[in-house]
Amino acid sequence: MHTALVTNDSPPLLDSIRVVRGVITGAGCGVPAAALVDAAVTRWVREHGLTVTVDADDHLARVLSRGIRPNQLVFRCGPVTDSIRRAVNLGLTRFVVDTSQHIASLSRCAQRTRYLYLDARSPLVLGDRRLRVIGLHADVDASQGAVEWSAEAERLLCRAALLKTCGSPVRRIVLRGGSSEPWLTGGAEQLTVIAAAVDDALREGCERWQVSRPAVTLVAA
Image: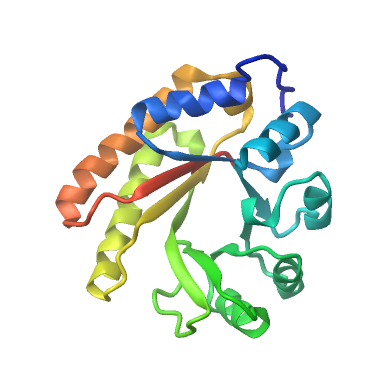
């Protein structure tokens, strides 16, 4: 269940973003489409251009009908290729892929450039100039607490090191996990712990793997 956001001069979602950015300067933040059940939340997300993640089983048309622009959406590809084609036809440009089938589907239906986040199982080489890798993505098992956020950040840096050897430096990583409730209710303590764990992992991991520090986006699942 998602808690409604109270409308005031400083909505909890904005406060939550400020908390995260207070730990990780310039961090990207986002919410899942499932969190857009409250009109005030939806309006704020729309007006501020916040990233919204959409799963394959979400109703894309409904999300767009609420005024969320296609360029705000990141579509998580699933097993149904029709949903990928529908997302492309609706104007979405950013996709999370984790199989060669996802990449092949996008290659078949994308007439213009599409931007990809590679998930843990995704091939590292795409072979289609219309598909551009803009970052890496990982799902976080938030039940394990902040330590798992740290571990996933470390794993992505390891993959970033592999991509670097292929001549494809990674400039952004996306970590997705946990409930949207702390974001919508101003759960500062929990978000601070998560952001600090990720920040520490990036600092130590970049030194270990000899990669430049990527930008990071944190998103609730």
